[in-house]
Length: 282
Image 1 (cartoon, rainbow, N blue to C red):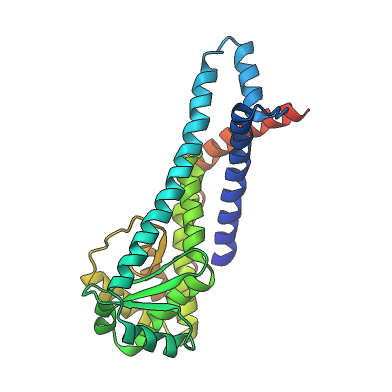
Image 2: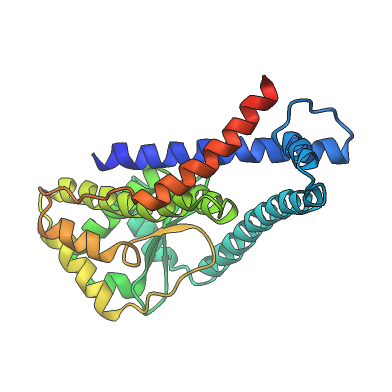
């Protein structure tokens, strides 16, 4: 059930954002390159505003389109910059011997794990094209062998499903399309669903939730919960309450319901945009 719900959230968010980004992109190209985009949503908005005597708002709309595209470019650039900088920092603190041991034990020698020398317990999955799992020496010393296996299984789910990239896309959509509040709700609950799915995967691997639960509690007691300025999937800083509830009772499904007001508001705004687009094509 969680997999279907998370997939639906992901697809809907991308579909909504893609439609709006596509129109904004065409409009920007029409300004920069002088293209005749014909039936463009933003052009229709311009004509509608002239009709009702609000032609001055054209400039506000221009600024809004340019602002949205610039913010999107900035967020993508910032993501690439901070991820690259953090990767270099991890390489500086890399424990080569432990990294090789982890790769031989859990990934048949493939370069999927990086172990860094750091006293705080850390377990994250980062990277878009070829995600890697980063573990700290503090984590390895804190957990027993079975607890460590549970954490690794959790992160392996994120890696195999390329969750850092998907999480970044959801965050990008919700932050740039802020006028559609349902995208923010999708982003928050998508993260919850992915953590529950990763927990479910780890529990199925070990056929018990005891090790996963004890690992999570140990990390919560000593972790400072510091956020990093790039997209990643972390073991112990997301959806903790939902996850504890699920670990205590894996059989019971956690219900996450759409907020009525937010849904209706977003649907109304998006419907107005679609109506203008249909009118433009008519």
